[in-house]
Length: 360
Ligand SMILES: C[S@@+](CC[C@H](N)C(=O)[O-])C[C@H]1O[C@@H](n2cnc3c(N)ncnc32)[C@H](O)[C@@H]1O
Image (tube, rainbow, N blue to C red):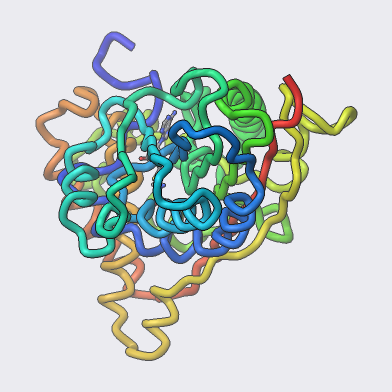
């Protein structure tokens, strides 16, 4: 677009470590896929004496990568001993806050670098909808809470910011079509990067038993808060209409679709694929503490760190619009207040799967 609004894809997570400070919801959810990663680390081929590459696709600022990468390193170490180097390739979009990632790895007491001098972290700032790492180089891949982000918003959402809640069937269909194409693109590139026998474990946004996206109270409150900012004159209705969060939840049918028929896709086979519900620990805390303000603030901080930068792309000046800081602050306040007024548990549908590189 010529007016500065982004149509190339979502914005990175909020920088300066903000995502790391507000990603407890994601940390709780990804825990449900760790046993799959542990099993994959125990299974992948580790022949030869070169470096073993573990890839972390969509790492953001790394806080939530520490546990899975430590698990992967420990699993590999148990099998190869101390001598073999392990390279951890963290990947994300070019604009991601990689400085925070490396500071975390350097300083955090839980960093996987603390106890193993043979581990070498590195990063790539390129979209995972293209090639990221050399062919046949990755033994073990991990991606959590990342592939729900589409490569681009396929169009505006006239009545919401999340397509799953739009009443417009053509909008939902456009997002579903983009999601299907992006999933195949993602798998195709990972297939090239995995070594024969390598495994990729993915946890991503799923669908609940009724096919729902979840997060109903959060998204209703978010859209209301945006409309209130428009009513107050901070943003225009055309700007609200240009705001879209290009994320999708996928069920087993959508995730398994590329593998239908032959059972393989691009040389990958789907070893496991299931949906599950993440825990809403924010609501759990609310039930014990009855702190409605804390409930609203924590969910609003989650939304701010992960999706507000993408919403800001709908402003006339895009991510560089002078109103971005006040837009983010006032949206967070409005969202927190609405959530605090009527705390409700969120449904957090997730999907976890393992693919193996079986063919050429
Ligand atoms: C919600 S964060 C997840 C971070 C971390 N893996 C976790 O589990 O908390 C999603 C990450 O995926 C990244 N992402 C989205 N689209 C991407 C793409 N096309 N290529 C690489 N990374 C992408 C975002 O920039 C963001 O850092």
